[in-house]
Length: 189
Length: 62
Ligand SMILES: Cc1cc2nc3c(=O)[nH]c(=O)nc-3n(C[C@H](O)[C@H](O)[C@H](O)COP(=O)(O)O)c2cc1C
Ligand SMILES: [Zn+2]
Image (cartoon, rainbow over all chains, first blue to last red; front, top):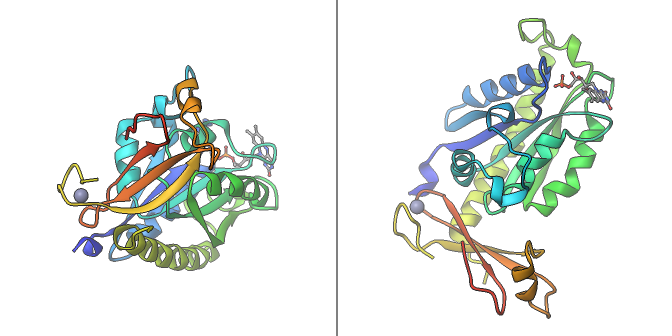
């Protein structure tokens, strides 16, 4: 049966900035996913997608990413807060796909140098999530003052994040299994 | 719609309204809905997704 397949959760590292602190955050979440039986986390670094700026939408899809997203059961988006919003390249990735996202849950992780843990970037992402057909969950991960959360080698300095990610993943995986059942078995009409 | 990998019938689980992305699509908009419908299907075996855009006067495509 299809439902025996591992739950595939791509983790989108949502910035191309050199020296980005969102990278250890995305790696941590991917590692926590891969520690669990029955789940498979896959880090998607948007800096490696060869994003094009000469067109917009489905015309600039990356075929491998499309394949991965088509098989995904849930998504995690790790988004740094830039001027209270999301990075432009992340929006391009969101705008380039649609069927790949519909009726799949998404968990949002905000990353910021400031104290608010990317809450503003998360709020700004919510209407976009809804429009591309992703289903948001009620747990977020907020990496506040991220420069204090990881050392220079990307090692986690604050173990409380493991517990927070655990709660976040519990909810995301429940939604992933439920929506997978719905996508595969419950007809619209 | 059949899955390209498994050849199984896919489950039609979503009709999402989408705005036209070209002049051709704009001519195909369903006046009752004011949108084009993206019909999304999922394979019960491999979980993969396909879709087609549906509107009166528009040739459907995946
Ligand atoms: C263009 C730009 C705008 C930024 N705006 C904010 C902001 O609005 N709020 C904030 O807390 N940090 C802001 N920052 C700092 C980032 O949150 C910080 O770099 C953090 O490490 C996450 O981003 P990173 O993954 O690029 O490192 C900004 C950084 C850049 C490059
Ligand atoms: Zn299939």
